[in-house]
Each structure stands twice: as structure tokens, then as C-alpha cells.
Image 1: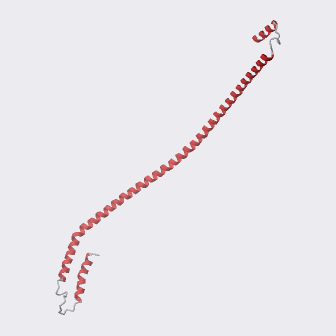
Image 2: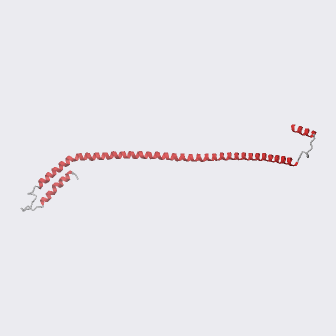
Image 3: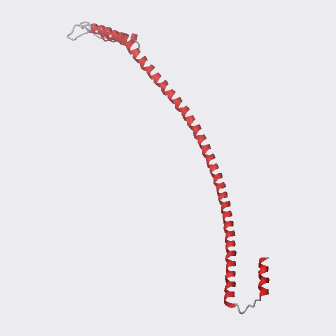
Length: 179
């Protein structure tokens, strides 16, 4: 309420109370023979001075408080905007990281396939090489076995008496070997 309304109420209420007295003399205290008017007047002056003296500092306090709240709100809004920018940057980085991860996975799979193919080719080459070596070894062993069998047969079954060699036959055999 405004100051004028408060003052009007403070003055009007006692007037209504005074209008209610019967005006006769009695032992009761009436408004006319009391110091009520002076007390109301003193209270009104005190309230007016109090309001006059406190109003300006109180207004300044609330203005300062509201400006402080506004500045804090501005700081909070700036921080919120900064957080939103950082969030959008982080989201972009996350998307880029996901794309890069997918590329790395695809490259890894392709490289794994290439390595598997190379390993398979080397294994096949090694296997064919081992098969050739085995065949050659088997051939060599077969020849050794044939020679051993022939030697054993020759040693056991054929004696010098069984073979008659003449000098002319020996010369022809040696010349065939040399040629």
C-alpha cells in the first residue's frame, strides 16, 4: 500500500472510534480525555520518519540485490551457452571418432583378409615344397633300396665262379663306362 493510504487509515480509524462515544461523563476513559490523539500523531510522525529514512537504503539494497541476481543469472546463462557449445563440439568429435573407428575396423578386416591370403599362399607353397622334397626323398630312398637289394642279391647269389669274364669282356665293359 502507498504511504498516503496508510496515513489515511491511521487517522480515520481513531476518528471512527471517537464518533462511537456517547459524550457523557463517566468513569470510563474516553477519547476526549485521553492522550490517544497525541500517541497516534507521534506514531504517525515516527512511522513517516522511519519510512523516509529507511526507504532509500532499502530501495538501494533491493536494487543491488536484483542487479547481483541479474549478473549471476547472466553468468549462469553464459556458462550454459558455453556448455552447449562444448556439448555440440563433443558430439561432433564423437561422430568423427565413430566414423574413424568404423574405418579402422574396415581397414583391419581388409588387412586380416590380406594377411590370411598371404599366409594361405605361403602355406600352400611350403606344402608343395615339402611334397616335392618328400617325393625326391622317396625317390632317393627307392634308389638306395634298389641298390641295396641288387648288392645283396649280387653278394649272396652270384659268386665269382658264376661269372666268367675274359680280358676282352673286361676291356669292353671299361671302355663303355669311360665313354
